[in-house]
Image 1 (tube, rainbow, N blue to C red):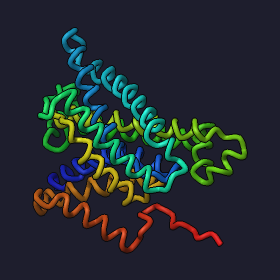
Image 2 (cartoon, rainbow, N blue to C red; image 1 turned 120 degrees about the vertical axis):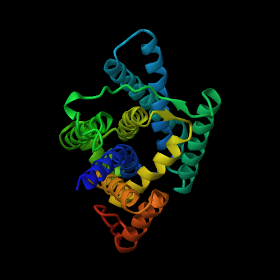
Image 3 (tube, rainbow, N blue to C red; image 1 turned 90 degrees about the vertical axis):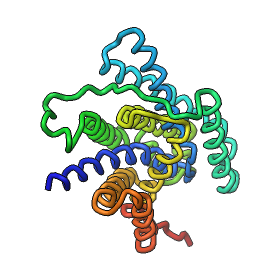
Amino acid sequence: MDYFFELFLSGLTRGSIYALIALGYTMVYGIIELINFAHGEIYMIGAFVGLVVAGVLTSFGFPAFSILILATIAAIVWAASYGYTIEKIAYKPLRNAPRLSPLISAIGMSIFLQNYVMLSQTSEFVSFPKLIPDFKFLKGYEGMIGSTDLLIIIVTAIVMIALNLFIKFTKMGKAMRATAQNRKMAMLVGINVNMVISATFIIGSSLAAIGGVLIASHIGQINFYIGFIAGIKAFTAAVLGGIGSVPGAMLGGLILGWTESFCTGYVSSDYEDVFAFALLVLILIFRPSGLLGKAPTQKV
């Protein structure tokens, strides 16, 4: 039974990270129906900014936990500015173009950011410092859950609750929902759609940066390619839950995390990705719009 709980908590940690990144995919798709393939690279850039800031603050002798907080804030600001700039440069000029054009632009931006970081930083894996101290109250449970796992789960839960409250009760959140329902009608009633789209990219990029710093601190190493793998998994989670649905992204991330964890633990780690994508295929066959997605209605 201990082994089962160990796998359950490991899957919860993985799923939390996937959900954090998947929220960025699903929010952008919900507003402008674009699959932002560069979103995984924003996650990667957030991790690199966290590494640089952590290195500088460590040299000044800051305590580890304050370094984690300051590095995360710096990563959020940097990643949000990247998300905002990418939307203005790569997507806004193509807003009225055929849907394939912004999709190709997103793939191009993803490759550009990967190569930019590889050339400006390094193509090798680099170590990420351990910024999360060992919690004393977890003594005796280290084999089941570690300090980083617990922090990732708590931070993800807080972020998701805050995001839901933001979308439900704030003026900007209501404008986001209105724009997602009907962009033209939202413009007619006076909503600044351009500002809503920019805010969506900023929020999604900020969530990816939080995930980048947390998972880098958890794994202990990063490179320029981590965004591609994490991005594909998070995109899978968003599709699994129903792309365009915020609760769907959370549910999809958790299901994907548990699937990988239990299949790795009880079958083989060699087939981790096989089980994850096989689950996606099965759900799309029987429910093409995802678990919580709504089937598109045909207007006549």
